[in-house]
Image 1: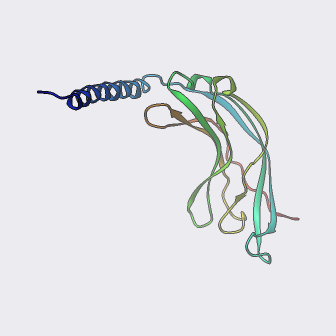
Image 2: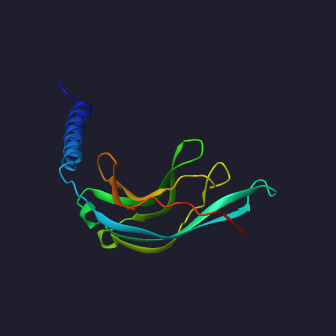
Image 3: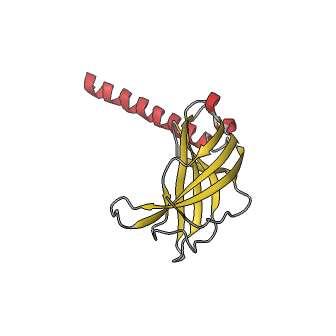
Length: 176
């Protein structure tokens, strides 16, 4: 009545249903583990330099360089369903046209709980420039240390670990 292929099909369908139920339970249970990491972020200096634009050598474009200190304890975010963390420093400002910009200026991937205590003092990893070619007249910026928790199973979770206490203005540009 039932051949071997239909029995194998029934068993594999049952096992895959059990596996999907288990994965759904794991994904839903990771919402129960809410952690609040804490950190400290200070911007020690901001320097704006007028340099040549990449594609147009005769056009000047302002590039912002900043020195910052990050101290963050992200170990509460690591549990049995955490694969890795993507930690990044983001500058939030509104340009002269009134458009809100969010620019990533530094990032790091944390793969182990032992590396989850982040202590970094340095400068921005990526170029920080405004599309209008100048930071003149741009309102002050807020800086935020954010993270993206990547689980083995489930949805990505975003959060904030630290924020500067005051908005920091851009100084006038200097010539190279």
